[in-house]
Length: 151
Image 1: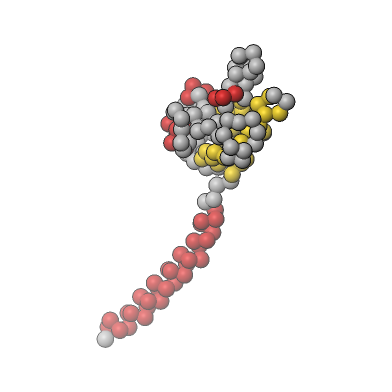
Image 2: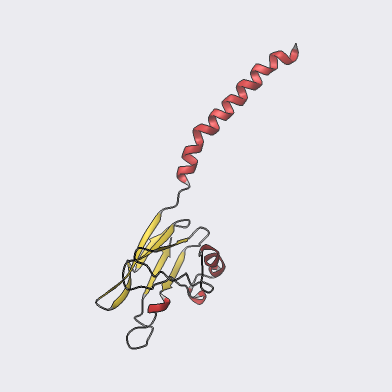
């Protein structure tokens, strides 16, 4: 008989806990969605560029690079210019690399490449496009460059 009295209390506590989990689940899932920032990759007047060239994001955000015109394009990092220790984090955040820290080539218009900055520390993350890293004179000073600033 002792068991019979405890069962309703246990069942009520279990139902209350389940209701609480269900009530909080949609908020938790929504709060974890990263913000996605879009950067267009294009060539205008013979000049390749990222638009915008500078993007400020938070750790955990994503940056979606879209090939608008003048491809192929890609997104690449130089390990020497990243915040200390972040080369390994970024390498894991980049799918389909053609070599370490070089994203795949985007050939088709509107093709995109998304990089997650989950685990990225605050700092500057300079990016460049390998096919357009050189300017028309063969220098790298004005090639297709940008910077992601994580705050």
